Structure formats: structure tokens, C-alpha cells
Length: 318
Ligand code: GTP
Image (cartoon, rainbow, N blue to C red):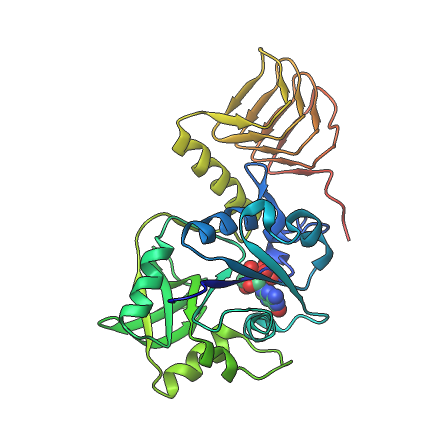
């Protein structure tokens, strides 16, 4: 990647496993410590020297542009590829690549992955080995819900999407680098799954598909439990029991624990206990409320003297 470093972020999925949080917000726009998951990824991309990003949108596409604009505020050029009907991950990549100015290899992120792997090293690995495609891989205890690979050396030999008895525990961690010629092979305006069609087809024709295995922190933020875990992990890394956004007010008799995040301008009343929760911007949690593993939507007033566990308050239903 000698000249422009480019990336595509796949942010057009329906996020069904993340409902009800995704009824009115696309999963990649859900706040993680008060900033969209996508913003965390954009910052990671910028730090790896990427200068242009295309957001591949479909579901609730209009939500992205007002927040990210042309990317100037984030120090990166951002443009938007909108799929009227979702094209799947492969179709989305093909469609978004048309907007890229650079013609070198392209970094592709799933919009729901949080990782500490070095993107810079992954890019260098791809270049040094002259690969067609380089997948960031990680090892998990239970690989059944993921795309699993078998490798010989650094070369990926098989790719198996979500199966009951996975042959290894090395999984596709959702960030890959594609040479431009590989993207151009994906049929245009067609629904294609990169996991179910493109990867197996590349392997079948003997393309050089390499694995960049990394065991640093990785999390797939696919459902509400994972979003709570991501929030807690990021907060725990700071050494604080919780974090709060600007202008939030927490009564001194309230107890906030276990990596909870209190959004900007939210108010927490006397005697409230909040354990591993995400409280949205401007939300109001009244006196003696006891919440565990619960999401409160931005602006929602949940009243006083009640308790809830694994609940969602104020998220619109379909
Ligand atoms: P579930 O419905 O809960 O499976 O979530 P999802 O819709 O996000 O699907 P999944 O987690 O498998 O998708 C992985 C990534 O690809 C996510 O960041 C999605 O936003 C994105 N994605 C999935 N399908 C499409 C698509 O058709 N178009 C675009 N642009 N992105 C997609």
C-alpha cells in the first residue's frame, strides 16, 4: 500500500441479534462510551495511516451522514455507498469500492468488531507476503458461531462459515485486506456473501489467502450482552469503576459499578444502584432505582423506586 491507504466499513446489516437497540439505530451507530462503534473504528483506521474510508450502508443509511459528514472532523475522507437493497457483505464491498480514489489494497472492517490488533502490522504482513487477501484471525474457546479456518503455515486452506463441529478454533475476526483485483472479481449489483461465497471461491481457485493471527483483545459486538461487555472492558482498562459523559449528574448516594456508562447530561437519583448498565444521553434514573445489565435509551425517564435486570427502556419497537 504505497500510496493511498483505503478502507471500506461494512455498516449496512440489520443487526437483528442486537434488537431492540437496533430498531431505530443501526448497530454500528450504537454508542460505545458515548461514541458510535464506527467512530472507534475510524480512529483505528486513521492511526494505521488510512486516509479514505467508504461507509457501505443500507439499513437506516441516513443515520450515518449527519454524524460523520465528509470526515473532516475525524481527520479522514469519508464517503457513503448506499445499497437500496442490501447486497450482502461481498456485494457491499464491490459497490463501495467504486467510490475509492486509491487503487491499492483495501482494508475491510465488519462494522461491529472491537480489536486491539495492529492494523499497521496486518497491512505490512499483506504487502510483504504479496498476498491476494489477508484475514485477521483470532482464537476463541467456542468457534461454533464464527467463520473457522484451517491453515498450513500462514496460508488458509479451508474456510467454514458457522458450523456445529468446527475443525479448529481459529476464526475470521472481521477485518481483512483485499487486493483491488480480488474485489473487481465480485459480480456487480449482486447479493454476495464474502464469508459463504467469496472466501471459499478464492481458496478453490488457489488464490493466496493468508491468515494474520493475533491474540490481542478482540470482541464481536453482535448482541446487547456483547455491547455491555465491550463497555465494561474499555472502562476496566482505565481503572475506573464507571465512566460518565459531559454534564451528567450522579447523586453522591448512588452506587455505579462494573463498567457502567452514564451518558452525557443523564441524571442519576439518590440511592440508585447501577451495575453494568448503559444509560443514554439525557436519560433520567430516579431515586432508589436498582438496575442490572440494563440499557436506558437517550432521553428516557424511567421514574423511581423500581428494579430491573437484563431490560431495555425507551427503545422503539417495530
Ligand atoms: P445480525 O442481523 O444480528 O446477524 O447482524 P448484522 O446484520 O450486522 O450481520 P453480521 O453481523 O453478519 O454482519 C457483519 C457486518 O457486515 C456488520 O457490520 C453488518 O453491518 C455488515 N453487513 C451485513 N450485511 C450487509 C449488507 O448487506 N450490506 C452492507 N453494506 N453491510 C452489511
